Image (cartoon, rainbow, N blue to C red; front, side):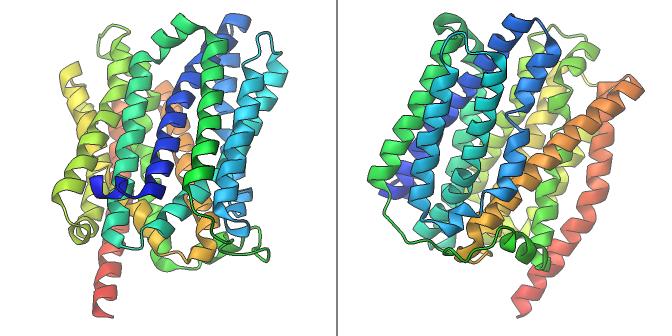
Length: 393
């Protein structure tokens, strides 16, 4: 991973994403506190949080093609600058909630083409498959570490500096990203050009059997994320205090960081591809252990193991990007990211509904594991057949 960081362009991308992600974690906590303190409504707080998710779905499909249509450095810099302005307006004390929601939607929409451009540019920077995969390992480890820090200290920091200042910090991180990316990234002409169609990449991806298999592997995260949405009722069912909710939420990303490090450090790219189906199946199979309604220590261990196996998603994402032509990589990346987020949203919603009907978060988690295994096995078999066919060719 240190070899990836030695590249100046990648170092700029990594730094820009890491510090803006830290600002985003702070902003999410600030928004939750700000909205709830004004409305005293859990529905309003949940609704505003949903706005950090829903617009990104539309943007992922509708705007990601901009990363192919225009120079990717331009897309990255413009998106970061626009987000800096929008979040800066959100930081103004007393901003009406309706305006706050509109600005938040704008921030999420502006981020969609930037995410697609970043994925595409990274693949352009690293033409070596192994080095590119390690760069994605570092990215996954960094993002999950930032998430852990946000879970651990975001609320405390917001309580110290206030919600407006927390949002202002997030705006500054976007501004820093714009400057760093403008100065450190090389200018490259548009990969696809102005003839790029809105959903051309989407149509092309679904026409490729091997990419459909990778999409199936990525969508399994929709079941792996079910315990995250049930953290609060799960802690209550296990007879644990409220602070256990944070521990349950942190177990998966902590396991992910460890799993990503182990894979990057000790497993070659070819071997990672070989065990991809096994790891994908293991990431959901581990959840079946909740059928015995384990104590907190065992529950944390199960979630950490699930997170460690879930690091397979880095290999899936990198392979998907590598198999897409550069001219369509931005649009395809948007499709991929949107699919993962939709799967996560549907998984959490379905998990909540089943838990409500059964009255048991532990049983619901176990059911998610069983369903996940039933879906993962045929996808894993398809992946194995695909790999063997490519070796023969």
